[in-house]
View 1 (tube, rainbow, N blue to C red):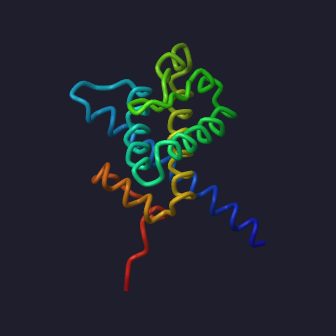
View 2: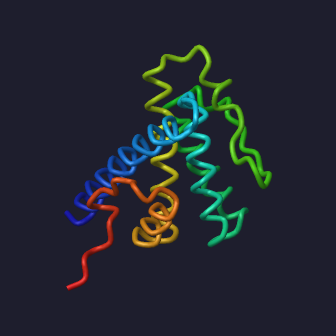
Length: 155
């Protein structure tokens, strides 16, 4: 029974992280002076999160989490297989736009939000929900952090 309830909580957490990823991508699409395409916005959101995370766990640690998120998301979204993991100081992923070319826009949207949501979930597992929430608020102060990602209120 505990295992099932833990699994249900994990699925709920993942859905909340994907919902947050949707907001982050939409925010990045509109925050640029001119509208960014969804793949470029997802790449920008990943880069901002990973740059901030690298200060905490090193660039290699950030890259490892991204590699794992890509591996997990590729199972359901084959267009993500064209994305290359690049380990330079300025770029973490390359080829999102090229990989998304010719793919159904709905599939691209679901794949990108799953990738970023999975990355957020892995960050939360690695550093904890509270620290992840603080990092997200440092990067995106207006982020509508969902109840499961917010730290409990102190009494």
